[in-house]
Length: 479
Ligand code: PFF
Image (tube, rainbow, N blue to C red; front, side):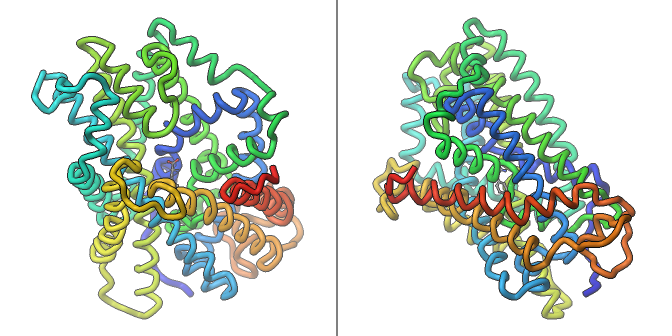
């Protein structure tokens, strides 16, 4: 089983890459609005409970299994349990589905950076010709060719980084991009909260309101759970893949906690950056969620800011682009690692990361082209299962395959693989490297908690979330 595997250059580099994967579009447009609409602080409390009792165990489980096997999800399950191998496949497939829409939205960010540069210089490619951001966005998404071109640019950036390898590409990029993202976020927050009327946005987001939870607990639970999974990049083998490149010296428990805490903090900060501005200048009735929040409401905000607006617009879309790129590279890496693992198992000597990354990117582009041409449902493409294409890919990945993947992994660890019962002195590696010499020397402090989470809490929570999704989708009216 011993094989030489690429490694992260440092634990900090790994953390930047893993936090980069977690921090993405989900944090910026998903979390703030969902928190505001589902109970403010009350929602945050529920989210934190879910992160602690479900997210932590799944994060730790993925990192540990990946590090143990030294392979991505397909390789990991193939090595540890033939019965579960398809769960690994499902993870890789989820990655393709997420990328189908993620790349298109990443491309939109590049388009909006270009637009704001145009506005800075009063150039013809600015937003000048349009009455407002709604008209601008409408014209953009109904132009399939432009959508595809920006998707290709986004995917090309992602591909080049992944081709650079774990340390040379992903880690080096993340080590610069993530701190830069943080600085840009702070600048955006300062501008946003000092706009007149900004406080409305903060009230919307933070004011505790237990009503939604009392009235429809299951629904709120499903929203919080789905958001947490997507936001933490869990349930599809992404963290397993990143964990497989991590040295045995590092402390997985500490890393899991740091990733979860950082992701949650950025989600909250993103809300403080986005909602006050949207409320201050977007006005009543403006879209506060999803693509329209980013590309209509906020672009209107930048338009209303005067001469400095395009500068903040550029900065903001660059911020979102960086968040999207560091997530997209992790999704491409899951599929690239799959091919690299397979080549190694087959004993291929000349396996080329570049070649596999290119292949993966081409397939992702094919899927993304459908979403780009569909233009958020505005170009009349046939709708699968009555959904527009972006929602179709989102529902299957985020709504079904990721919670299912997490549930099955927890069951696998809890009942088949089992947390090793040994006396004191058990270490993180001891949990997973039965009988082997441990290298990290860290005590596995949360072993009992982790065991209960895997055996009971995660499977039950995931089963509920899946049920609510299915219920909502088929309109069964159970919840
Ligand atoms: N965590 C990313 C976000 O919040 O936007 C999305 C994501 C990235 C999900 C990577 C899954 C994944 F493997």
